[in-house]
Image (cartoon, rainbow, N blue to C red; front, side):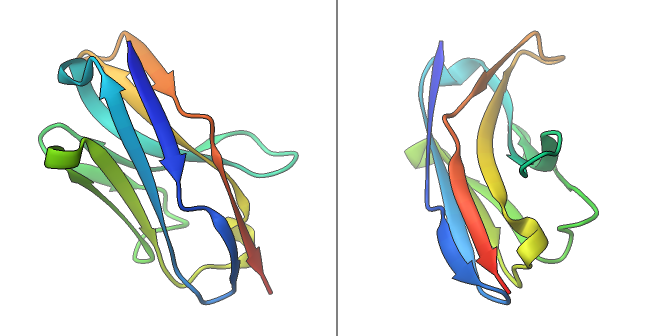
Length: 118
């Protein structure tokens, strides 16, 4: 079992920055990749950024050049640094952890809300 706790959401003006954190606990040795997803009202949940155990990253086209995913293995924490925020980035952001490679199980955090005002 893996437990994920997100933090760092909030209200920010357009053009501003926020950093989300996701602290993992439990069977973290089994985690092969972690990711951030988001879900805006009335829309499907979408992948924002993902980082593998080996450090390989990928991003949604809509956030490339503005968001950076990183991790601190000593703290079992993954971060999402968000810059140049736009109102369309407003969503609930969820941390995700994959177990196994290829993944056969995944875990989700409770979500943290990000609101970007225009």
